[in-house]
Image (tube, rainbow, N blue to C red; front, side, top):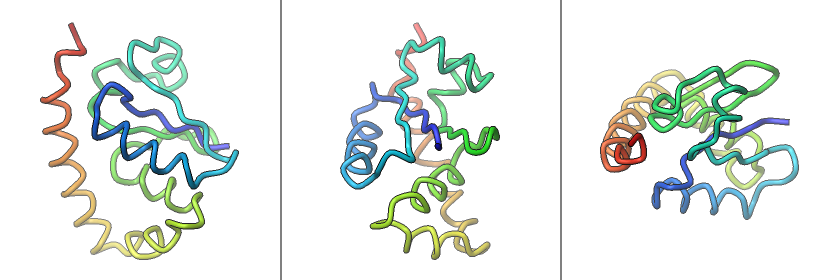
Length: 115
């Protein structure tokens, strides 16, 4: 089972994850990181780090950022085509840049959660 750690307090993040939940099966477990100390223990990440990027645990390994989307897409049949496209190195590089920019602005927008 893959554990997906996401910020449910972020409207955009919640909307996207809720969409994926509709098409996923039991091989993905969705975990809200908002004020979730258990998520911090499971990932060994700070609350700030969990809010800053999406994380997954797959086969005991913690993966974050754009690569976490690859794992999600690979595990949802409807989105497997995205995995096949973006696992290609040059396209993953572009996905990673886009993800980091979007994640940065979403983090700034939701930074109030750290208080």
